[in-house]
Length: 206
Length: 206
Image (cartoon, rainbow over all chains, first blue to last red; front, side):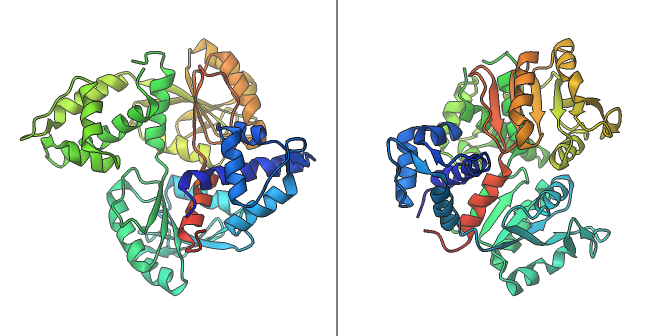
């Protein structure tokens, strides 16, 4: 299986390549992609070699071909159905972000424990009562969830997601979830990010 | 200077310790803190030793003492003034998140290029026109900024922030900023997080 960090880099290469394409660029060099991910040219070449792409020292890589290969790697032609749990500030922001339809991610439903939000359509996505989560996930064969519930509810909700068949969770709750190794968890920990940021920008670094 | 990853772990330890304290726990063991950061006990002990804290094999660490030392490390008694640039979905969510006043982070002002938003108070924070950014930052000696502008405006805005005296940027724009090494940049890249997530939860891992 491709390592996590490689997958992350491939995602970033593709974004760079699409921008380059929009600007009319047809060839890129490994050092340009390396800059994008703050890595080395050798690493870029290894990553792309694994996808069956090789460049030339003179011309570098063909932009269209790289995009095509990375799209295949991510299987982007297929729309992926995702659910979102917890419609607070961050949840609402994400719904709004993904309704643009620019990505292949489709948030098919959202869930909340607040009855006031249930049955409303918030940013194109219908909100269901949290108790319906398990049934919805298994009936619709959903594999991916975005978790934006408060810290106190995160572990319990993650357990329900796992038992319903979810294989990957993007976790915005400021808790480390305890789940079996076959469930992929990606933490987005904004509180920790800000604490780090303040520490390193304070000029009082110890 | 303390390495970035250690700072991140200290932030997570403290969060765990505060929860433990709220639950009435007075002592914790290194392995409990290690679980929290998915690390090892030995690493926890090294991190805490560097702050001058040592535990005992029988009793572990004193929760209150650890919190006190980590608070001192982060200098949390001092409120930190931060600005936010770009009031889109994510910007608005963050303003709402930080107005709670539960952290020592104070978003003193926000900035946008949309005249409709200027002079309005959004979630306790007054919105200024983007052109006033540079003056505000230098006059108020702000060191830390949260960047939530669209990708196309991110580098240009980051340059303005740097020239005005900003030392740390939390970057939500899906671009890798090019800035000198003395400016600390923390990237929060939700698009990349979701692409990774979908890849690892699809069951079609290559």
